[in-house]
Image (tube, rainbow, N blue to C red; front, side):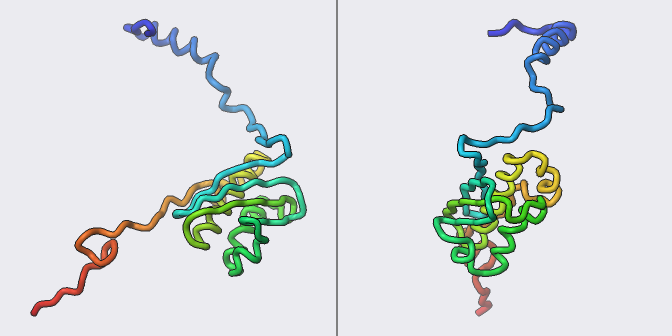
Length: 163
């Protein structure tokens, strides 16, 4: 075990010795890509988990082996998936392949959006500012409240009968 520090001078020496080991926080971020030139990220929303790979391309989005328009039929859900590209200003420049499990369609669309945002930021760190300002890199932690015993739903009680 390390020796015990008993004075402020010893603490100063220990910290200054470790300072050289610490990572430089002002260094620019490096792009994270695999051998195929793709960036990978995991997005989450409600109970849905999306694994997302992006690579330069023509803007084709594939979700669970289907085209985006076939998987997310509602225009609102398609708009949710396009938001990160519009905010970053890279519309139709990346191909997306995503696999989603759990939750409903709305949660899955949010999970894919979160994954796309994180993958874009890893592919090109310069896009991080715009995506973070729009709030796309933050996981929406709201989930359904559990049902309580003695109640009809999470908060709804059974109807009260006076007689």
